[in-house]
Image 1: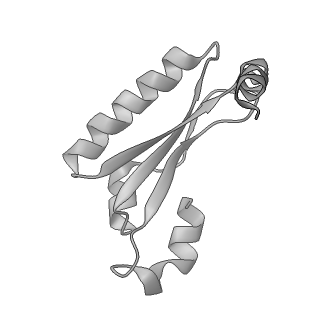
Image 2 (image 1 turned 180 degrees about the vertical axis):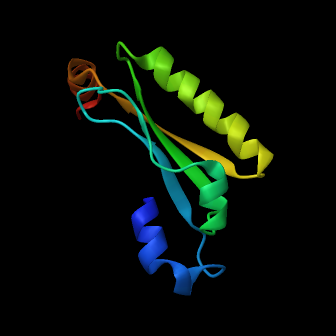
Length: 103
């Protein structure tokens, strides 16, 4: 869930259903990262964990991995778990995998 939804609709569910808050996003064409929420803010919103979306198999993979490492360090200060959501950017690799695994 993103910060705006958490602020506006999550309050009745705090403590009943775990909240995983998305903190870092990027676009499909591997545009630079945007940090949407800090770990401390996620904790204040009642998050049990934070999620980082990052691109792999892209030109900016090192920057994405650095952001993940920084987010893990920051989250550790607040004892928040981090979920890494890895997304392959180069579509031709996905198509090759589909051909190999097609029944």
